[in-house]
Image 1 (cartoon, rainbow, N blue to C red):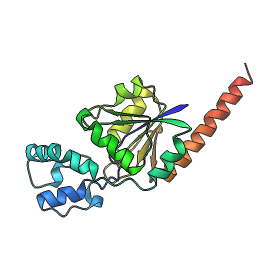
Image 2: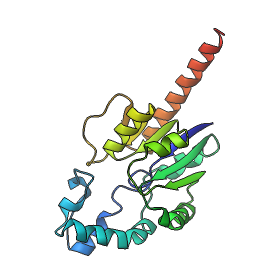
Image 3: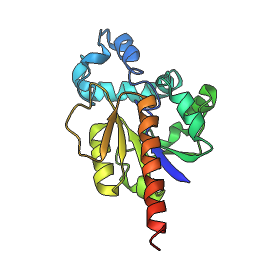
Length: 199
């Protein structure tokens, strides 16, 4: 079985999830299309310290109310019997119950959820021998590909538009991700079959 490593926020959840909460809390009128970098502090009218405090206090509420990314239910349901779905997120471990409940409430399958409290996912990807990763954060995608030597699917957003190396594959949605995965799996099968004929 192929093991997929999958980020949660901005990948399985809609990348717009947090914006309504920010707009309401800080009296802003930010649009998703305006978010051209991952760090959100420059877009709000408060200090980084105050924003961080607000975010930590409101994380459970934001995560409970996050809508799913378009098409993800269908694709994960298709994959759940064929592949291992390992969700690896920068969320803190104290949010595991909230996270699992959200997956169950949304009808999203999972085999394992690991909340590591950091954006550095390389050790966890190696620990679980992940074969393919799905991400929305540009530097994460590039580092995971380069350090772990695996392909990484990068979901296209306004905040991850920097250039990407060949092993990072930019897709617009889960349907495109599924098409790429099927092609990749088919090529791997063909390569294994070809290799076996020479043994």
